Image (tube, rainbow, N blue to C red; front, side, top):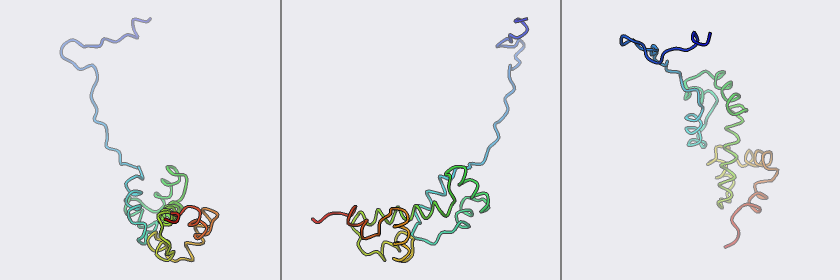
Length: 136
C-alpha cells in the first residue's frame, strides 16, 4: 500500500514533475500607503471620501478594511492621529493653541480643547504643564 503513495521526484523522458502555474497578482489591501499619505497631510481637510479615493476603493470598503486591519473607523483613526500630533506640538513647546489646532488639523482651539480632554483627560493647558518643556 505504501508503494502507491510514493511518487518519483523525477520523471523519465524530460517531463516536469509539476506544472508551473503563475501566481495571480492580488491587489494590495494594506492600508499602510494611505495611512502614510494621510499622516503627511493631517493639517489638510481630509475626509473618508478623500481617503477612499486615495486607496482606490469605495468609502464602504475603506470602512471594512479599517475595521479589519485597525479595529476602528477611518474618522476615529484620523481624529486620533490629529490629537497625537497636537500633543507632540504642545510637548515641543508650542503654547499658541490656535496654531496647534490649525497645524494638527483640528481646526479651532475650542475643538482642540474638547478632543485633547476627551483623549487624555487633561485640558491643553494642563497637558502643557505636565508634558511640555520645562523652564530653561
